[in-house]
Image (tube, rainbow, N blue to C red; front, side, top):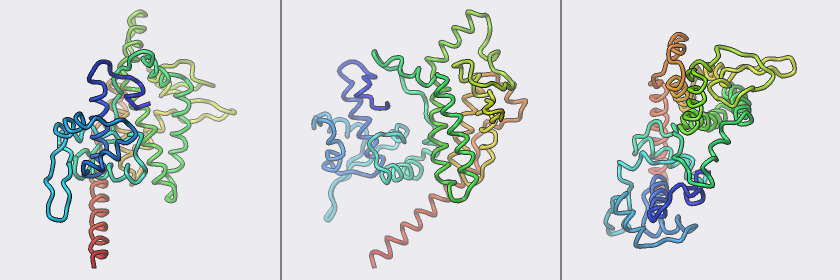
Amino acid sequence: MRERRNLRLMEGSDAQDKCLQYDVIQWLCVRDQTYSQLCRALSSVSVDHQKLNATLEKVAVYHEPKVADRGYYELKPEYWKEFDPLFAHYYLNEMEEAEDRAVKIGKQEQYWRLKAPPAAGAPYDRLSDLLHTKACHLFLLNVLKDVMHLVNLDSSATCGEALGVVALQMLAVLLSDVRHLNRIQRICDCSKHSVSKFIPTAQVQEEFSTENIYVNIHVTLRKHSESHPSMYQMLMQLQQVNNCSRLVDSVNYVLELLSLSGDERSFAAEGISLQVNSRAVEALKRRLRKELRQKAILEEFAAK
């Protein structure tokens, strides 16, 4: 769904150039690349070498070859903000390497925070509507329930954090989808209400009665005479999880988006902290520094 060349998000002569630039940036996030390595990485698409050279001149710095090393390209600092952790062509090891480099080199300490993509052209202009459905909201509710269980077990905490971050990325995109916000606001304007008037304090229902995420995120569903916590209640609990810094920061980001689009006073009254959890970020930095030291020790041992 994030493949621009397939969704035709851009029209005009510069569409292929934008797609090529996007791909080049993602591969340079994994590691510094020689020209031949980049060509192999881009082998799934037809490469125009003239355009590739122009793109590299724009987004990368070329390091001249030395006696025993080939010349290579390094991503310019200002383009690290375009790192996409959901790039479809990463293998697992490449994704992990790109994520580590995004923090250590690109200084993107919150690279997992995603925004809604730009509007697509026809016939894909209504594709984002899939997010604004009862089925999607129920799916997110069930995933968050699984995450709650996984992160409380030492044996599955890492898996639970990864699953939770992806689910919250999806929720963040849903909340920041301006196209749908505009539709909601038009409905509210027509009925002479504000968006915040549609946000309940608590509801217990058999199923979601609306496709408005600002309502459904507060709804407690009853299944088989048993009530399950709402998405909002689970976010409050996940905010207190230890040793899952990316997950906690993702929760904070979702709450920020939720407050900006709803009634900020109601959140302030409930004492929700909308600031980035600095301790969580520091914990992530310490873990990355430890991994870097371990890697250096292994490399030194291998050299001997």
